[in-house]
Length: 193
Image 1 (spheres, rainbow, N blue to C red):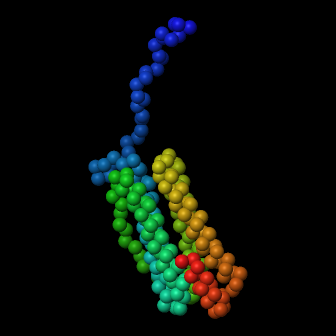
Image 2 (image 1 turned 180 degrees about the horizontal axis):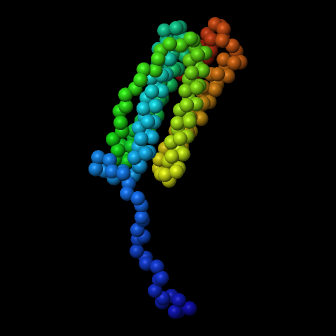
Image 3 (image 1 turned 120 degrees about the horizontal axis):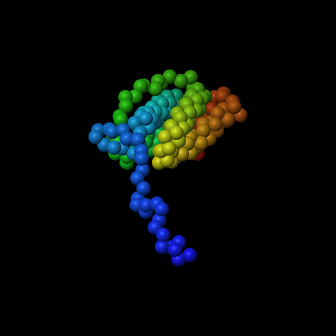
């Protein structure tokens, strides 16, 4: 047994070297995130800001058409989307990457009523969720565990977004879309502020 303890180790105790592909170089830097995922995050920033503008346009329509509480609620949704854009922006900055400030298209400002806004908001959140699932899939494929953690934050937020929008749709279906039902719905929105 004494000979076993005296033997030299068969492996070196030196720090192992890790063989990796050369990461992309951006502005002379060597970031911890691939160029592909940088593109995904810049797209996420642009899409979250576009969502903010969409909900702001809806808010202004609601304000102009006599829905004071729905107006304030959609304005709140607009502000929340800017917070979500900052999640990606802050991540990129932490990795030493300058985020892009993309041009945004006008979201439009014509709606047929509160039910139209609710349905378009619901459909919009489905589109956003698909985009975020694509980002999560890509982070997983590239084994970027830090990025994948960020995608989990976005996906958790999307569960909350769907819960809100599903509730709005359910109320329309349960109580109807006549003027009295819509007035009661608008009054209910005061409690959500």
